[in-house]
Each structure stands twice: as structure tokens, then as C-alpha cells.
Amino acid sequence: MSETSPKLRAELEGIPTYKPGKPAATGGPVAYKLSSNENPYPPLPGVLERVTALAGSFNRYPDLACSGLVAELSERFGVPASHIATGTGSVGVAQQLIQSTAGPGDEVIYAWRSFEAYPIITRISGATAVQVPLTPGDVHDLDAMADAITERTRLIFVCNPNNPTGTVVRRAELERFLDRVPGDVLVVLDEAYREFIRDAEVPDGVGLYRERPNVCVLRTFSKAYGLAGLRVGFAIAHEPVAAALRKTAVPFGVSQIAQEAAIASLQAEDELLGRVGSLVCERNRVVEGLRAQGWTVPETQANFVWLRLGERTVAFAAACEQAGVVIRPFPGEGVRVTIGENEANDIFLKVAEGLRKEL
Ligand SMILES: *Cc1c(COP(=O)(O)O)cnc(C)c1O
Image (cartoon, helix red, strand yellow):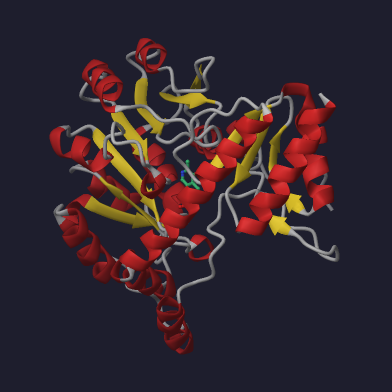
């Protein structure tokens, strides 16, 4: 056998691999997964029925253009169907956006810490990642991000609310930032948690897209709509960005089951948004509980909370796991804890209280 191995692109060296949230432990008395920002509710019966009915036809390819879903989204948001592009989760669409805009020598700007897929998909493309630190309050530093723009900048992610801190940028500062971005640089507003926002000052990205040809909005069915396992997300973008997304899509990436489940979810939106309302109540209960215990918790508008714990991060996560809740540690920085079942949130609060007392 030959000693050599196939030549791989040098850009792949040092790319961090995506770390999925740890699964809940099995075998223990209770085990809750609060590590991936998933929706704790099981699929709605109506959605499950639609999916089950389709299971008998997966010998066929899906509708390549996702036309039923695109028509539904076009109606729902009041945007032309040609401005909607679907993909395998919004991460899939984000990767297509980078493929469409940036390659070696180009720059992609995003806040850090933010969504961990950004550095991965940026480096895969060969583009240079420009990471702009969050403010001391764990919020996007939009002034610094605008200052970081060069003639090589092709794309800027604004994650609103930010994963993993839950913090938001509001209308005035976001508009001021957008005014500073040249028209030939694409701004991607990643609104994976849009439905959980209760702060009226946070603008809906779709409104900003309407006024600005270089703004694109990313949305997903994975969080509020509870379809994380089916992999479907979408972008709303002007031409020629939307057209570029159709060119860079993996053919037949979104399964027919995912397409139909997404349509059924949009049609059951009232019920799903009712669940989101309950999760928001739980979020507020958890934040207030933590603050009452003495923790500093940044204002969160998403379905998770962030605790900046520094060196205590790993020990904190281990204590949670011992108690039956798996959370997401970012070693040396902090933990992100998804709002889950009420009982899981209770366990988390109890562990946090115990650890607080040890300080
Ligand atoms: C979860 C998440 C997504 C959505 O991922 P999917 O690929 O749609 O499951 C996108 N952006 C951010 C910031 C997220 O946290």
C-alpha cells in the first residue's frame, strides 16, 4: 500500500469540528438535554400525521424547488417567492451564503463569541474570519464591526439574538450600523430565535431587508417550530443573492418530509407560538431565579441563558450533569443553558443555587 494519502485543501487544517450539544445521559434517574437550544415539546400531532403519511414515499426525490413551502413563506412574509431560498437548516443556507460571496483573500466579519458554525463555514470557504469581540456586556459591538470592514469584506453576520449570550441589538444601533456598511457587502441577519423576542425595540429583520438590497434574513424551523431533526431553514434576500443561493444549494437537500412538516407548522403557527409563549415565561422565571440567587445574567431574548463563569465553567457543567441536566459549557468562558421542560429548569436552578452558595 502507498504511504501517501489524498491531498486535501490546506484550509481544512485547524478547522474546529462542530461540537453538538451533549446528549442527555442515559441510565440515570432523570436526564434532560439543555445543551442544543432545542424545543422541548414533542411534534404537534397534526405535523406528525403529515410526516407519517409521507413516510411511504421516500423512494422518490423531493420537490427540488420546495415550491409548496416557498409559496407558503412568500404569503406569510409578503415577499416575492423569488426572494426565498430554502436549505438544509439555516446553517446550510449560511454556508451557501458564504460560498456565494467569499473565497480565499476575502473577509467574513462576525462577533465573537457567537454561533460556532460561523468560523467553520468561513474557513471551509477559504475566506478569512474577522472576529470582533462582544462588548463587556456580551452584546455585539456594532461600531467595532463597522470599523473592521475593509475592501476585502464580503459578508457580515449579525446574530440577533446572539447565540450563546442571548443578547440583542436594537433598531437604532442596527440601522446606524447598516448605514455604515457599503452596499456591496452582504449583511446576514441570523434570526434563528426571532420568535422568542419580546423586546419591542428589536427590529424584525424582514423589515430591514425590504429597505436594503444588501440585507438578507436567515430563519429556521429548528427552534420555535420544533423541527430541528428535519433540517429545514430559509433565507429572505433580494436578487441576485437569492438566485446565488439556488445555485449553491445541494440538489434535493431538503426532504419532502421536511418540506411538508414546515408547511404544516406554518399552518399550525398559533399553537406553536403558544408553546413559544410558555417557553418565554419559563425563560423569565429562570432568569429571575438566577438573579435572585446572585448571578449576573445578561438580558436574554432567546430560548437559553448565558452565565459567564470563566474558570468555573467546566465544574459547573459537571455538577449540572450529575444532577441530571446536560448543559453546554464553553471552557474558560461560560455556560449556555437551554430553557427546557419545567422540571429540567427546576433542576438547573437548584444546582445553580447550590453552586452559588459555594462561592
Ligand atoms: C440553531 C441556530 C441556527 C439554526 O440551525 P439550523 O441549521 O436551522 O438547525 C442558526 N443560527 C443560529 C445562531 C443558531 O443558534
